[in-house]
Image (cartoon, rainbow, N blue to C red; front, side):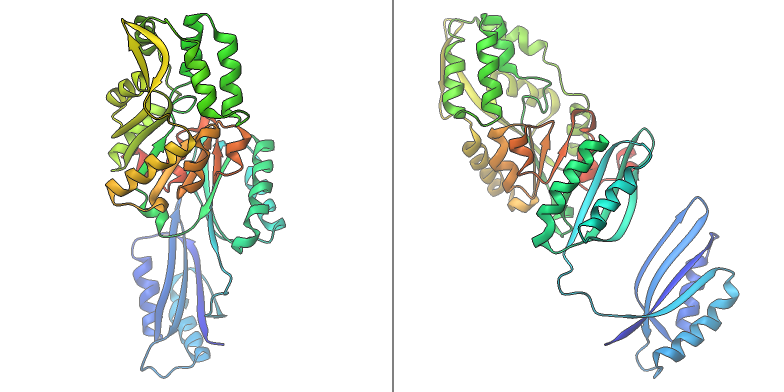
Length: 390
């Protein structure tokens, strides 16, 4: 089996260390084929994989001895070892991002869960520190065994009060360009149709139907038509009043503005109504907005919806159309929602997030994020605390 020289370095940081170490390796006749380096609070760490340089004619033991001598005067703790250069055939990489309030024991519980299911942690780093904690784990585990680990991680995180997002570590993670949000209970804190029902005096009936529809217990189109029918005669001025008082989910405006600043296209896809999505598009800067259109006559709702209803299938079709417009593949899309009518778009997206969601959506999503952690979406997409401060 081909061999490489693994070199690990630890010590106090100072300017020029990387040049000194790489110079010593070159002097010994080595060619650096992989390097990882970090400096944290004055402590320098480096890992290198080195092979004998072409044309030097040196066997690995001779390279090891000469590198040992060349590095001896640098004043760092250096360890050298021969390792196999091959990669395991079933090395499927996955990225896990853990989000939430910092507390003792979280890292141990998560890493123990991964170990129990046979995962090998290859890299780990904090991407946010302080009151809000986020750390990212890159681990290898065959894809066929990932569903069991996903379920176990979800249970562990619920017990710990933190969130987890699990996704393949692929080139698409860095290439995502479109983020699609549901409106009700995602961008907006609550269900707009329930507020309309309150104004119409049919709150109890409509709220009950809304909850069942979001859990996937009734057909969404049928439930929407029934709920809108109960709004017959509601004056448009009541819609205007409700629109002025819409409460945004904490952090949603900041998340959307940050995504826009980072160059993402952002879309709002709602099973609610254009009367509200159009206002949110203007207020928050969404590039696209789609929803159902309420029929109005003489300044009042007729109790009917105009045009095709935006249900789960329609949302998925709209995402496909947006991908066509933007020249993207589904793997380059992030979808965020909370209910059964978000199921198809979340399942088909490159990264699907169940936000403060019902179990029916959690089962198909790559991860769950609770209301207090919406900004964690940015870390799940690969951002760091430093990125968000720019």
